[in-house]
Amino acid sequence: MKAPVFLFTITLSLAACSGEREAQDIRDAVASADSDSATVEPVPTPTDPAAAYEGPIPQPIMVGSDGPDMDACGTLGEVANLDPAGDNYLSVRDAPSTLTKERDRLDPGQRVTVCDSADGWVGIVYSKIDENCGVSSPVATEERYLGPCAQGWVDERFVEMIAG
Image (cartoon, rainbow, N blue to C red; front, side, top):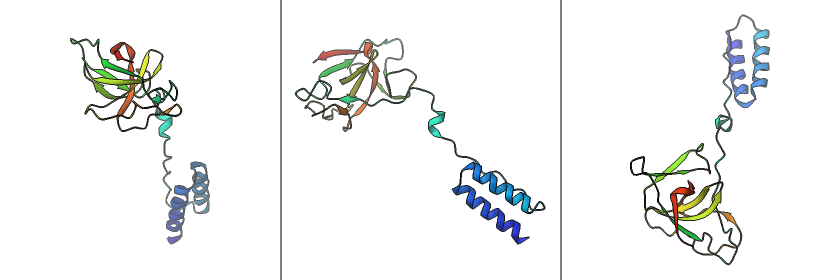
């Protein structure tokens, strides 16, 4: 009776390190070697988290697109034109699409720096605590924003450009 337990243990150990196909081959071999032994439960296959995501892929905010002699982000904006009888907030998203995850909500009057644009959306950088976001100086080449402030995409209809 020790042999089936030993084979079962080996099967589970190998299944953890092997792909599902290899694990099934091992289970089949153990079952045919000793048909009187206890049945081996199938090892669940881990799911691919990327396969479950069905929306647009998150898109980083790019800075420096105006060239090395200009500020990394050259336009200051303010959240405006919201419906006070509606939600009265602006959703910040992971990509320029309503199908992507909402990462934050901005109140009317919130100041933002506009750094990027795509299809009626603007890529913004902002701080709710008046932090220096590091976008008012030039960068050598266009690059992803990696600074200390929050970032995301908002519908450009709700950002009033006030400088730049």
